Image 1 (cartoon, rainbow, N blue to C red):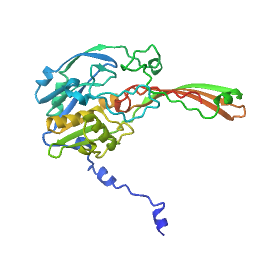
Image 2 (tube, one colour; image 1 turned 90 degrees about the horizontal axis):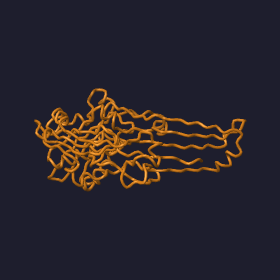
Image 3 (spheres, rainbow, N blue to C red; image 1 turned 45 degrees about the vertical axis):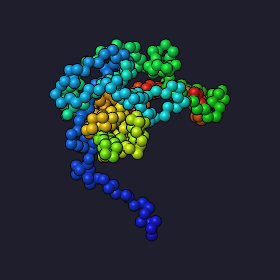
Image 4 (cartoon, rainbow, N blue to C red; image 1 turned 90 degrees about the vertical axis):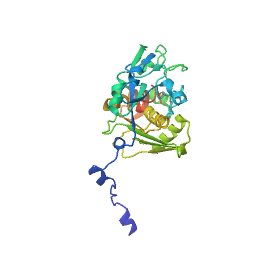
Length: 336
């Protein structure tokens, strides 16, 4: 009797009535007293050296509380914790909350404005002048992995960040005994989920309890807490991460992003809540792209249609990676 009632009985979704009635609560719905708003100045270059950043005009604009560059962040501008494990890493690198002297992708944050409302923050951000020295950039991952390509990261021997090899069985024997070998090159375009709700963060610091509360549109609140603890030099117990209703993600909200670190740090530093809401343009530019793979495939076949073996090589480009947050890396299984 119990089994009959439990097995095959559809489970009702408890959240649906609230959501379809418009009573959902997303990050951008959060309004706190004295809240400040964050806007970032982003690089138009894929690879460039930052010569100079002029912030005086923006700092004097109405409603502006702070204009922040990498030098203002001190140790908080350390490399962020990676949320994605690169297979067989050769040179593990991740970005910082703000670019420190060098930008490595279009849209990387070079400065930030904190103001009393979002519109004043955006207006002031337009007053920040950044002098760039453009550097050579490579868009094709095959060229980026070659020895002649300009290096993106100091201290790395090449732009190949990871390499992964898998061999199952004996592919050489399979191809030696094949009647037919078929080769095919495929390119899978980069793809990105576009949730109705872009990313957003609200951070509030309570000095009485030394508690930092961060509301963020994320799929991985526990990982975000760990990443924030590392970035801010705090214990995980002193950070509470809340994922309210999330208006879609599709993998684009799996990683710690610079804006989460900046909001949390600036909330603690200013003593006021800090909010950042991503624009659609920012989401298209920065948020979690995937695929972007080049496949070289070779099949060993018999004339009766039997498949004897498969060789596959994959070059995977992530660009700014999940959430725009990891450098380009190369994954190339050897024939097998």
